[in-house]
Amino acid sequence: MMTELDVNGVVVEVDARPGEALLPVLRGRLGLRGAKEACGRGECGACTVLLDGVPVMSCVLLVEEAAHGKVTTVEGLADGQRELRRAFAEEGGFQCGFCTPGQIVRASAVLDVAAELGDEELRREMSGNICRCTGYTQIIAAIRRAAAGRETTGGETTGGETA
Image (cartoon, rainbow, N blue to C red; front, side, top):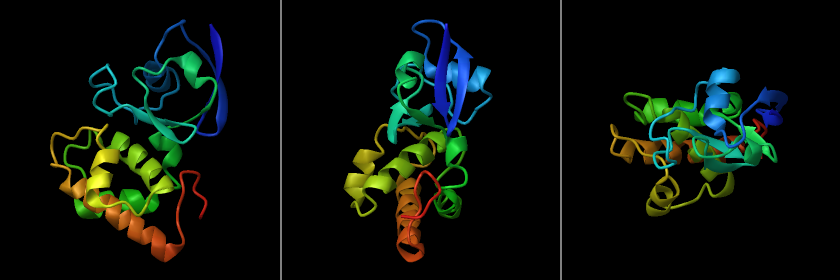
């Protein structure tokens, strides 16, 4: 069935089976490989994308559900999240890199709504994304650094505009 999706600000038409998850469409048909297939159950966060600015697991989100909103992948955040990506690199917020796109997508959404959270609150907000390498300390430090960078530069949002 042909379905229209707004992905990273571009409206595309994709052929998707009824009940098909968004992740294989993003990766296989649209060539957007940032979101990763890992658990296939919406438990690990490797497949995180934004739907209308809210983090969702694309491995369990149906294409027909995504058709009613704006999907943003890590590729769509590329220009708008330089400070966050830089902070992840500088703080060692990744090791193997497998979970990093999902971590960055979720962190960008967290920063857009609540950049002044404490460490415990940040951990809670990021809890939908699993990292088996870092122990999370570096990820939280990276988010803190990005938040501080936003304060000094006037802010960055998922759309790449300043706040």
